[in-house]
Length: 217
Image (cartoon, rainbow, N blue to C red; front, side, top):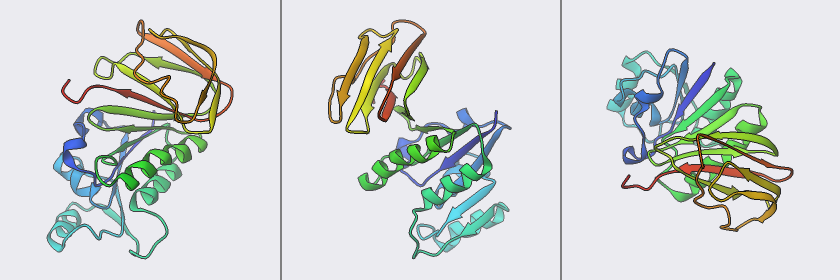
């Protein structure tokens, strides 16, 4: 399985331990300051992209000394550094793209970074946004399987379209059958699996699926 890990420059306190996700099959891309984040976790990215406007000269020297392939863009550009990194990740055509360091800072950036999962999904690639307390995916209509993870026991389904049609949840403490869920509804917040595996399906709309835990867990 081919995996690309994309790391942004979000605050360190929101990050999981990146070494937990590192292996020989992971291709790492740093977005701007995300390159320093990777180096702090003793991971050398294969590619670094961005305008690097958040990095000073000494930090840039540190990056250069690691022989990272750098793609530098003008600060006057239409895309964010993370979008450029995701575009590069999609070009590699992996099975999965993990996004790290993309939450916990500015809310406008955090919201659009979550929405970037749509672009990954439309490219036929599984996209996952991971921070210390959450595992977030975006799903299009169909039947989907979801597995129990002890550190993320809560599961929420959040419409990202005006409505989600025929949402069915099986294997959950709070099951659902062919329900229309409107944008802004809290109906499907904080569910849990009954066992190790559950399924969910819907026929129309877009869903954000969030596996989460309490901050103090």
